[in-house]
Amino acid sequence: MSSTVQPLLKSYVDYHTFINLKGIRADNIPNIFTRSLYNSAHYIPTRLIGNYYLIKHCNNKGQWNDEDWLYYKQLNNYYKDNLPTLSILLSMTVECAQVRDIVYRNCKQYYTQKSESPACSIEQFKARQKK
Image (cartoon, rainbow, N blue to C red; front, side):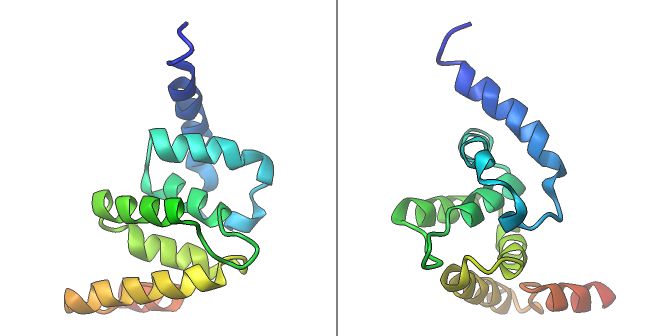
């Protein structure tokens, strides 16, 4: 097997492993999975895997670097419903405070432009489901 295929194959296996992460707080995922999240998020950029990858990349000041913001913008471009999912997942972790505030504002603005009630927090999502 060619060495160029291995990262893709590894990310595919990791992707299937991470499918069951839904509902788990990002800060409860052991740091040993960070590389696997990176591979899965970049080679197979599904919304859920990408969100967990970004949350795991908050630094000790609760911020992302420029590369992470670029990846965030790309996810929002290809996965239009990424904003509410990421905003809700960010609200479940304490490490990403500054990022959470920005993503929440972006999410709220997105729904305002669409003239819809926001679903950017757990409470808003539940309220929206009741309608």
